Every structure is written in C-alpha cells, then in structure tokens.
Length: 89
Picture 1: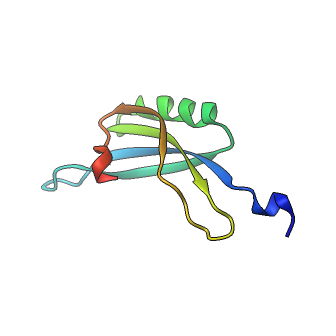
Picture 2 (picture 1 turned 45 degrees about the vertical axis):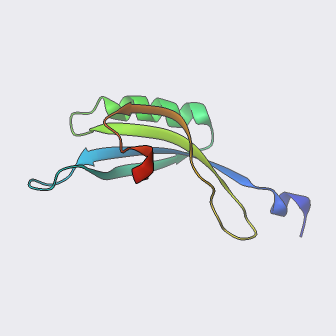
Picture 3 (picture 1 turned 60 degrees about the vertical axis):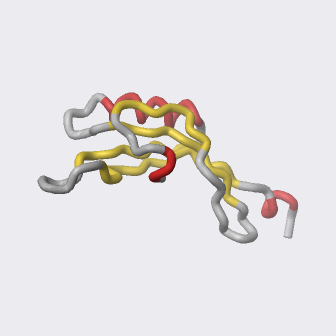
C-alpha cells in the first residue's frame, strides 16, 4: 500500500433540514451534498438555506480513515437557520 492510500480522506458536506410531516414536531434531513472544499460546502448551505422548503442547513467536514472506513465527528463550518442541537446529531 502506498502512503497516499493510507492518507485520511476529508469530506466536506452540506446537509439541509426540513420540517417533519404534520403531527411530528422537529426536523429531518432533507438533502446531502459532498464537495471538495469547505468554501463550496459553505456556499451551498447558504444558498439552500434561502429555499422556502429548507428549515436550515449545515456545512461541515469529516475525516475518514481509509483503512477502517471509520468517520470522525463532524467539524462544523457554518450552521444556518433551524438545525438540530449538536447532541441530536
């Protein structure tokens, strides 16, 4: 295995939230988009948060260990609008 194959992979994610269906309070995940830079994920979160059907959006990064496939805790870049509490993620 080369050193590049052992290198951790960084994923930049934009995740949107929508209101749950009638009678069920709270939020649910709407869409997820993956980008190659933090700026792209942040820009998408900002644009998505302006949509009428979007309650809120997060842009965050996670680091994946390619050997185990495990993904670390998210590091948030931006949180816009109504988003879940960090304890709920």
